[in-house]
Amino acid sequence: MTEEHLRKETEKWLKKIRDKLSVVGANDEKGKGILKNINAYVEDCEYFMKRGDLIRAFEAVIWAWAYLEIYSGEGILKSKSV
Image 1: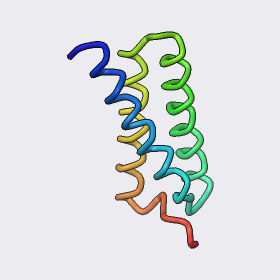
Image 2 (image 1 turned 120 degrees about the vertical axis):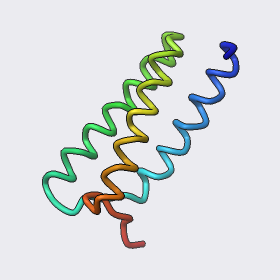
Image 3 (image 1 turned 180 degrees about the vertical axis):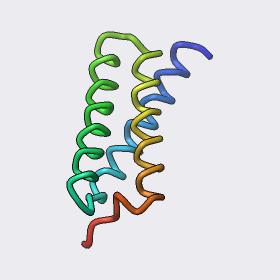
Image 4 (image 1 turned 60 degrees about the vertical axis):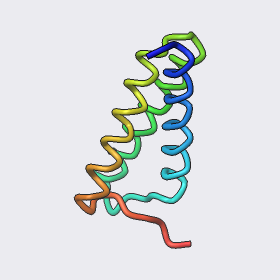
């Protein structure tokens, strides 16, 4: 994987998770804690991107995405009413 390809993939997943997080809420305190952790991974991704550490940036955004998918599937996180 080239550096440019890794950067583009990371930016793609970062945009996807930001979009998804804008419409996701928590059902309870546990869910709020999970959302806090997911957002921390997103912030970590941004931090690593700014420093050019693309491997850690990609890893952070994939962890964020994984947690979002897992806990949404478990019903702990839900789509917000619009």
